[in-house]
Image (tube, rainbow, N blue to C red; front, side):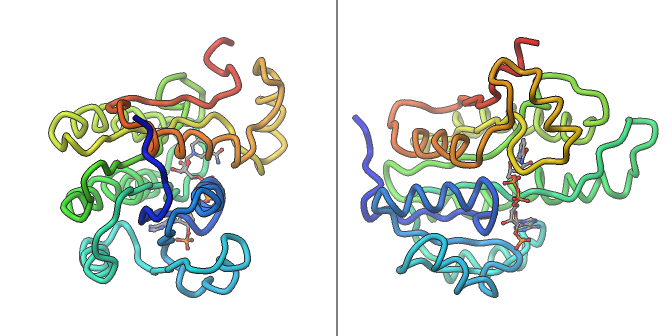
Length: 232
Ligand SMILES: NC(=O)c1ccc[n+]([C@@H]2O[C@H](COP(=O)([O-])OP(=O)(O)OC[C@H]3O[C@@H](n4cnc5c(N)ncnc54)[C@H](OP(=O)(O)O)[C@@H]3O)[C@@H](O)[C@H]2O)c1
């Protein structure tokens, strides 16, 4: 059985740019009722309507703040699907040169942000609903300079499998992107060595979130969209 997204309430935290925005556009085209959240989503409401379409809701909150998250969820109410694509600020650096404060802040946003958001939001999810988190290929393949994302992403993959057991029948999955455009030239040159020979577009990655929301028999899994990065 495939769930349709028609009239489904889909909350995308991190939906105001990049991959999350691409998911919002595709989900809206599929008939979903979009609720876009990020620290500044409400302030970007007019731009979001232009990009995604009419009938969307926008809420501003910081996923790292339990208080703000709880208040926003109270206003949002029931949802069918929760998608999380919020991205922390990280400057790539070798482990020995990593700024520990920045690494901890990245954990607060990406790992603990997803953790506490799901703890608060799971009771808002209706029957046949799902959660899709975001990791990244650095959680599986080791790249120098990406130690913080490596540990956050691999912790998130394990967390996904645990949640798929504990929150069932809510399905819980992750999308693991490779390198997505736009990116600095040095990363783009790196992606040119992958079998796909280029960066992914946000739309190509967004397809995976749509699939995971719609497919009613997939849970506890990671869908990797990496252009073959794992093969080199
Ligand atoms: N792009 C890549 O190459 C790539 C590769 C692998 C994995 N990923 C993962 O894919 C996800 C999306 O990445 P992206 O490149 O699409 O990111 P992006 O374009 O930078 O967008 C990030 C989104 O997160 C929101 N956000 C940031 N901090 C937040 C916070 N504390 N609370 C609530 N919202 C917050 C931002 O909006 P506000 O500024 O309004 O808060 C924005 O909507 C991330 O988990 C990232 O780690 C990306």
